[in-house]
Length: 603
Image 1 (cartoon, rainbow, N blue to C red):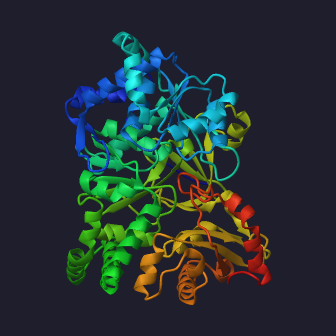
Image 2 (cartoon, helix red, strand yellow; image 1 turned 90 degrees about the vertical axis):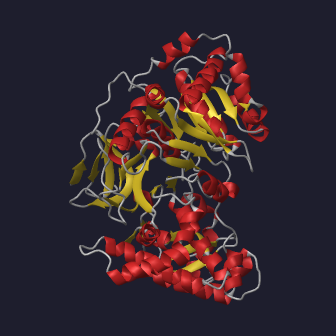
Image 3 (cartoon, helix red, strand yellow; image 1 turned 180 degrees about the vertical axis):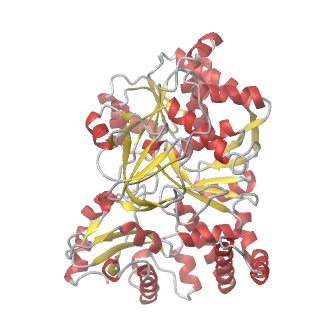
């Protein structure tokens, strides 16, 4: 059984908690900028010092105390990623409370489950529409008190309510929690079944954050560095970065709307970026489509190839040749610098997680000048367990364990993890907790391998392994990730369990489709028509053929169907963290799957 451990770099006093991280930032850089906030479209970014933020946190925490929140009680936040989210998070901790995030896209049934299971006492939502959803859950949540609306000045209301609460009460509550105390309950978005509440402690965040800063801070997130959050703060990945910024001495911004993300990136100019592979794919594909629309597709493709070849050469003992360096400089002037500019112009590092990035994109972005450090973790591990490092990167891997973490590969290939960042239990679910652990080791449910240097590679989900009628085990993630990299493709679900061969359900990217059609001299058409068009099908055939080069004949996609609809968060086929709800897709599109094997499919 393979195993690799990385020792802790920073020992943390058991009396510390998340509040001490903010206190340390105020003490060391109180007048320096810790956040920048933006009022809306066209507004400027306004700096907020650590001391100013701390004062706001105390004022809001007083409001929570005035509203009757006691230490250890749950307060919910249902909102997009915005400044007030982070303010509320630290205010809840300062009041001694436990933060319970709820995705703003959650259904009434999901809200009802989370509010009742976590015993949420007060809930802050973003809009009146969110409040209406919560109203439907009230009959099942007798302990839920007020529901405050950010768009209706919830923050101002809390500040006014707390004016009579003394500073000493907040100081007392801030010191109550130890590393072992509960900080948040994050409900897994769940590709199957009812979401489970993951209990994360102050120690999970503080120990992981302090050690991540010690390992990555000098290069990736040094004091004065900047990052713009656009991932949902209800997800553990963004939450970890929110805390990391405080400990690292970095500056944080929030971008709540993907429609303004490009403009926000250009104005905020982050030095490091947090994202999921789908965003990196979108940036690449949209850049290619833009070049094609201007008659420069060939120039873009040559530049992209040069970036990839240049990056691969960086891993060779001799490095890039003088001729390749010259080619790279030309590619940079013509194409690559424009991609950097689209990301704000000064981003040097990115942290990618949530799904495999793929070697092609990893090398492309490094060739562009953006070093993408691919990492791996789950909600149950407070986000990252492993991550590639500035001085130790293997593109295609998810890196070695962070300090304090250990990874083991079980005999069946499952990744097991342990360390101070691993959650303590599922809320109100002893059975699920028992199933999740093998002694001290958390069962990730993911399959992978571990090399001699401790670098982990993820090959798929244990529960998603497809066994064909011939008994061949197939990990769908390898095929899905490669095929999804095509600019026409939005989502892919590989099928074939107990079937004679592997097939796939493909959805088209409605945003990318018009540009692709235009550059291929085709008329405008909707997704349904495009899925049947001979030239579109020919392009998909070639994409499937390239994808199949990564696997054996028995694992290759033989037939596929192009669906008339996409999988989105809105239609509930994607989780808020952009993972496909495979079981729901297989259930609702069972007819399309069966048609692949009866000869009646759209193949």
